[in-house]
Image (cartoon, rainbow, N blue to C red):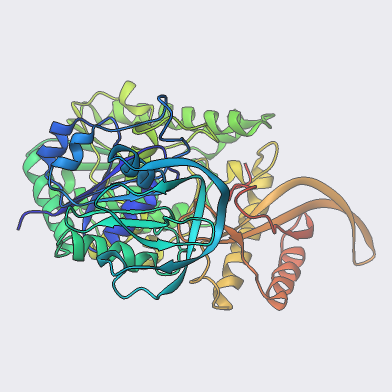
Length: 513
């Protein structure tokens, strides 16, 4: 069966990845493309539908991103969202102006006309608005299908041409029935059948990898995280012991994590592959001595990883393929737009320059994180590994504020272990997006027994999030926090105070550094 595809044209919107994820949740394959993609390339893809994203610009300015009006002559259904709706109106002869009243946040939406996009949607619903411009006049041939108090054209459509536009964001969870609208677009309007399934992805990928690699040698940098683990198992299923996985234990992992990775992938594990563990803990501690600046710590950890991996690769000899656990958000963020650097990422970005190989293999490059987890379960990877808490590449190096030392690593490992254990015992682990303990650089006076102490403060972090783009602090019951605090102070030497971080994202980030 031919794979159905919907493409998302990115006009600079912050939710472009989220739109693609929502379409894939409908079991319809979706990719994000830059707005600069050529019309002939779109024809070659032959998508079942096209979605224009939002963006921060005004369509009536010459400097704003546009697209050729010819796209509307392809006979392909198009949905415009926010800026995308305004662009549709602008290109097809409507009017877009600065709105008399800007709309931000939860807004009541009223449906005005029968419309395939709103099939099964309540006559009055709640949507998420974020705009300063608005469609003042819909193009000829369009009906206004919804409005809000401040926005006369909150949605418009031309069902004959299969063009639809919404001023709000149906892809975010704040739009109460947004998922229903996206389902209506891909199924009712585009005529998709929903044949994108993870089991077919796994089978097809293994078959393609086996064909591509043949008798070649494959090298994989295994971190123990879900991305590299799923990539490694896919390759193991495809080529067995032609694959060598190098696991660098930098001493900045969670408690017992290095041994857990070796248990799954090592000589006594369940997978046919060659496994190399490098215990480089002391080497990292020496390199990080005296370093306090977060970005410098990240770079040192990343550079040292590359050096160690290079040394191990030379022992193995020339390989034909290098495996990277790149996933789709990495591809989008690195290739579709110019974003401000919040922090450098430690993946295996520097490896191609230092390892002798013929080609890079990225079997997960078109999957989102939740899809990677589904692939992991399909491959039979243990659930505790598949659903392991997200963990930064630099590990505890960025969960220790200030200088990293072996003693500080011990403290945060022990505190984090207790925290995660009690969260699981309380049955709270399934509902949280991420939770962990970090070590602050603050020391304070305390009293333990008859003695005065001057020890570190541990900060606990827990957030609720569906997409990790925004997050709110989890409201952990006080009795659970109290138990965690008592255990950490009593059981972890070097800690006499525990704090809980109530900051959301924004303004904070999920990690501390």
